[in-house]
Amino acid sequence: MNDSQTLIIDITQLRPGMHIHLDLGWMDHPFPMNSFTIRSQEQIDIIRSLGLERVRFSPAKSDPEILQTYSQEHAPVQAAIEEESPEMTARRLRRDLLSSQWASLQACERKYAEAGHNFRQVIETAHSRPAVSREQSESMIKGFLGEIMGEQEACIRLLSENAGEKSSLHSINVTVISLLLGKASGLDEQGMLDVGMGALLHDVGKIELPGRLRWHDEHFTTSERELYQEHVAHGVTLGRKMGLSKGALLVIGQHHELADGKGYPRHITDKQMSLPSRIVALVNLYDNLCNPGNPALAATPHEALAMIFALRKSQFHAATLSLFVRMMGVYPPGSVVQLTDDRFAMVVSVNSCRPLKPRIVIHDANIPRDEALVVDLEDEPDLGIRRSLKPLQLPKGAFDYLSPRKRICYFFERAREITPPAENT
Image (cartoon, rainbow, N blue to C red; front, side, top):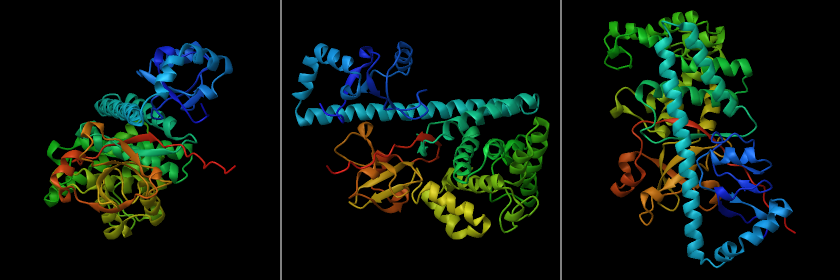
């Protein structure tokens, strides 16, 4: 068995000295790396608590005594694996990969649901216990920062449509994307905390408005529009009661300002806006285009990005907009696309380092929908994206299979580690 070969073993077979691979997302386990050699029973107990039934095991990278013991105890199992037909091996590997992908998505959705629950608690206590509300908010943001501020790259992951709920979806989406854009912009620790707190609470002032005015409507009367816009001032007032930092208050107060001075409430330009405010103002508009109050008016993520860049470019700080487009990719998660081989697919994850090679789910009538794998275009040099489509442009079979989202939910996902090409020997 060479160094590149791994076996799938039951979780009960784990022993100290084994080198294993956890096929999970970056937030789904507490270990520094996905691949490591087990050194204690405590690590085994933690791995077993993750809900996995099996893991990948690398005998050649494990301690020598483990390799010898395993070879003696499991020779019949290894022989059976070696006797598998290519079709059986492909089916087994596909099943294992699908299981790990599904587990990773479920973990992201649990984190998103937990964030939504915590956000609703923040809003419920904003008036009665503002200091507690601030502490809850800071705990959320520091948790997010702990996930994204390491050396490991982060992807933006599309979640299923039933993730989260409307009352928290917008604020969580804006927070997730703003933090990633803040990191890409080089914000320091305080700047990241300000952008996170400001993004999470940018609409906190809407709790002062009547329910029917909490979602912007193009058909507002002049008086209704004026009342709606007062949510910014209400938010700053609540933010002060909560004891937010000056930077976070600036984000709340400036999240509807525009670079050309045509925003509100103060009509300032981007030169007078803080960098965290520029970030949140841009992300706020993007998510409002994807998730408007009236779902019938929703733009696809690709359409929203193209609309901002083509029609509203002057409204945003040029460098921030350029970085945002690069980070989200030409085809942001949730985009429906046609591939260069004419098949249809949906983008589910984007790494800003490789924006033209996102992870996708491909429509394939020969594979059951619930067994569709996430395909990384980075691994498919001969396959690319030809164009973006509106969901209704899809053939019915592809539409039913891909199930384009009517609302877009995003969360963090660990980016795939890049394996350097092997040197020729």
